[in-house]
Image 1 (cartoon, rainbow, N blue to C red):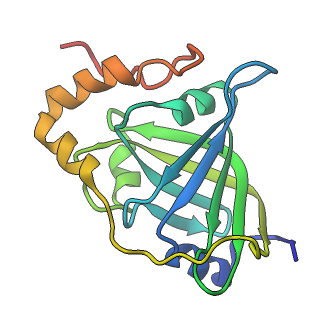
Image 2 (cartoon, helix red, strand yellow):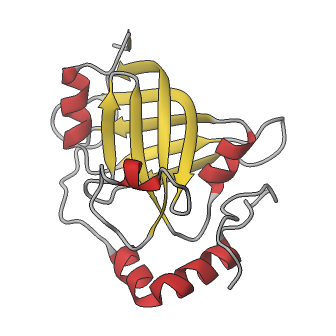
Length: 186
């Protein structure tokens, strides 16, 4: 059933590349605060950098819980699960960090992904634990199509509109932690 791996080997890389969705879990420090699980799924938004490093393109959206929690403590888990005939669940536990679109090294990380006007950061995970398990109880689902309303919405807003949106919606977490507060005031 479950197995711990010493790295993200080729079999797991292939499995990850085939998945249409992944989930990111983070939590603030301490006993209070909300645990967050975010579904992600924009095509080509996740990459395995090496055996112990992964990254994904973080997009401007209605919240910024992951960034807030990474700023607070860095703990993160990324999970992939197969909804195809062959069941499997892969979890990557680690320490996360991010580079924002305003950071000097953003271009170095963003080169791993297609350009997207909604991009606000790249989240990088230094993977400390790699595991997979059966997924025998997961339903079998078919991928019908990709949904990318977010990108066109953010493109229509333009750079100033995206920054204003982030200042309004992304500056703090639902628990009041600092989140994406990196956009300069205009």
